Image (tube, rainbow, N blue to C red; front, side):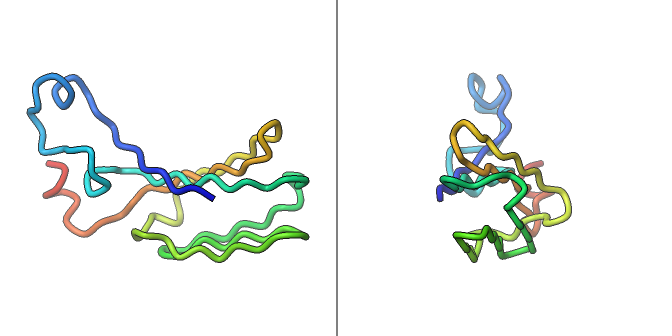
Length: 103
């Protein structure tokens, strides 16, 4: 599996440096987890996401992943890319004081 981080940036961030965002994970809004699942069908996947844990089960594989940041477990997205045999899960990172960090 891979854990990647995404952040929304605009021209004011890229060209003018007007916000307090930097390339670190502390300024990222979303966490993307890509899990390679060879020889797996979409219907065989069971996925349970909680605030700090991702639990994935298939007939052949199990993954219990403790996430590096707390996430909003109610508002995530998951999609299975059958050509690449990869499950891609996108979760919104929930941090304390986000209204201060991203003001």
